[in-house]
Length: 370
Image (tube, rainbow, N blue to C red; front, side, top):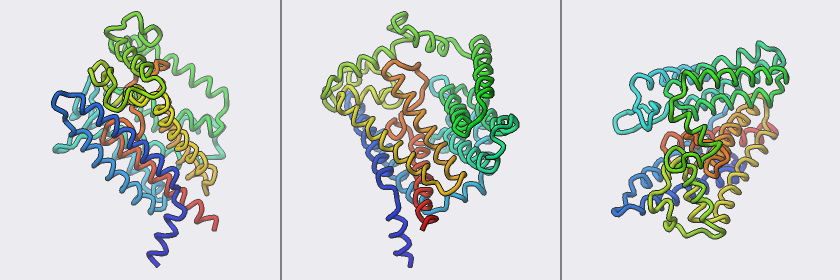
């Protein structure tokens, strides 16, 4: 019976979704390898670490897929509580990297609590929206659903991690738009955002964050300092041509002109070394991944699973769109990594956990229909 159960599970497993995620991880490993060999004495520690974490994350995704996704609804307030405690703890005991106090260290391991907060927020909103679906046009629905999002948003802003705070906002905002909130409320939210931006500009944003926004509109005003990241990324993407310079042969990454080459600007590394065809293939696998997410959402057996998959899709697509946008100069630099590709343990694990959750929905959407 157990063998039959496993065969049934993997029969309805969405292999295209799973396969596309694994291929994207391989793209990231190739780029990390390329960056590692650029040193006089190559250090492959990050590559080895990412491989181990990737394998563990893939195994975790498979294990999660065996659990009925409805159990998340039962423990959502525990997830929220843990996420809040960790977000508060990181403000006092966190490790600061490049001006952001966003990492907690446990022995030799470091992780970002905001990754748990993103998943917890998606689960909460899926539960809330599925239970209050009839109340969506009501302003109370807007206030209640936004309360948890606001707490997470503020705690993340205080780190300060504006990239992750933006993602937390987008999860909530895009889900209420999809859910069918009144247009007048959307306009009101946009006006409030404009007011918050003005307040932040004068009282919260630091000089380097203001410079990032200013340089976005005209990088040539400061090409060798604040606009350096964007300028070098655009050069890397453009110099790749059709076929690329070859893995490990990109001048921008190999000669250290391109900063954050394993994280924020890993897309530029791949575009330079694999060219337009390689970057197009990478984007193609992302599109396949999002297409499968949309198909699973379409087959979702109930509103909870529908909003759960849509929330995951909103988060991952936002990260993909923003990261690629800042690599080609269309969006300001925000410190948001490329899902499944950028280096980072907690980032990769959280992305693979979401694959496991979606696979659980995919398998049970077929099971409930048969």
